Image 1 (cartoon, rainbow, N blue to C red):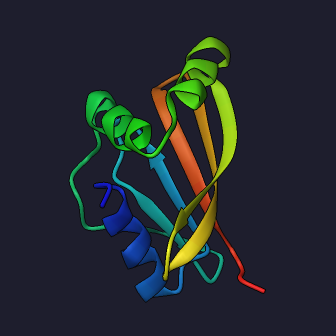
Image 2: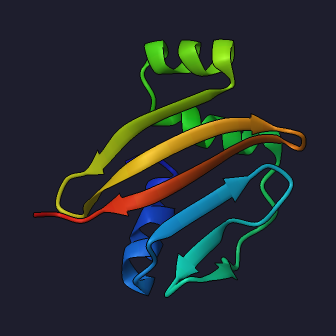
Length: 103
């Protein structure tokens, strides 16, 4: 299990639609349209990068490092599917995940 999967399980338990992760900040869930910080330490750039890269193929990592942005799907069997967006910004690496409703 990837380290980041614990955040997706919390997201599912809380009924959140989105998970926002930005280096230098605490992770945030979007619950019923409102942003709520997760009771977790501030993510440093290296920790966040390690969590994000753990769920990517080498090809996706290469594209992200070349362009500063990538979108892809991520699935936790038996839990949910997510649309992932990794991006580089003024404060470092960031990512947003949105749950994709199952049909």
